[in-house]
Image (cartoon, rainbow, N blue to C red; front, side, top):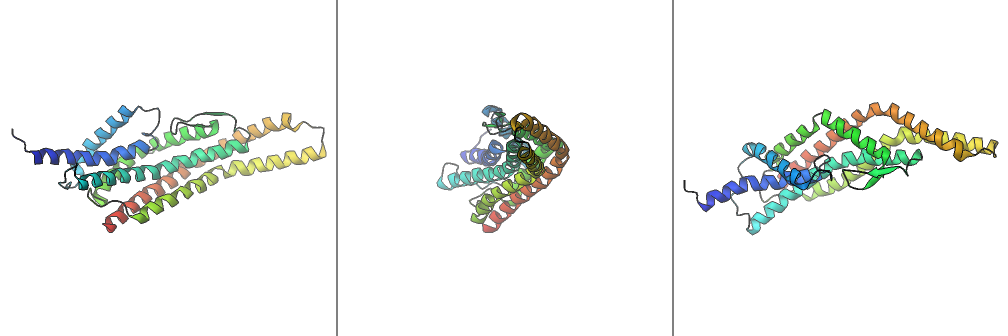
Amino acid sequence: MDLSSAQISAWITSLFWPFCRIAALSSVSPILGMQLIPMRIRVMIAIVITIAVAPMIPAVPHIDPLSPDGILVTIHQILIGLSMGFALQMVFSAFTLGGQIMAMSMALGFASMNDPVSGVSVPTVSQIFTILVTLTFLAFNGHLIVIEVISESFHTLPIGLTGLALDSIWELAAWASYMFAGAVLISLPAVASMLVVNLGFGIMTRSAPQLNIFVVGFPVIISMGFVVILFSLSSISAHLTEMTSAAFELMRTMLLRGAAHG
């Protein structure tokens, strides 16, 4: 069987450029982007997803990958994948930040451990929220939705010389503010409860100065903090569903603006 160089190039580009977008997304996505997952495993997962999605991808332009236009297409695919993964990563970062705010308010900021997602030390409360959110995301088949969204992205914004619009980049940067707002909303019950407890201990200190507030206060604050977290766990799924839906909607909006810009 004789294969021309044009046929070989077309076959390579039909898999290479989708792989660039999928690999970029998986490298920064919340679950596949964990530091605990070896790079080889992440590359293999990206290859498997690319092979599964490739038959549903529209026709890829016949451009030499080593030409200036081919390099530009590669850069666009990497930026698209990174932008989509970053939008989803902000959802998980909101819960991590919310756990940090809770830990600081309940005097557990010193109890920290390594976060496998980001590779940095975070309070134990943040790690608990990270594990719960990850399990909830998998229980909701969020990983399958991510694959569906990345598959739809090739139809919304096909592979070509057109990438994301500048407005989409600014909207993605503004999306980071939603992370802080979500973190405050998640940690608000614990922060408000700890404020009431601290006010109570302040009144006790003024009325009984001989009371050792550090011996009595820390166990009570920590215990009350865990009680508040226990009662607020039921709202995690609602917050996760709302923020994840907003992240997926942001992805589709960015792709549509890129397609309209092109």
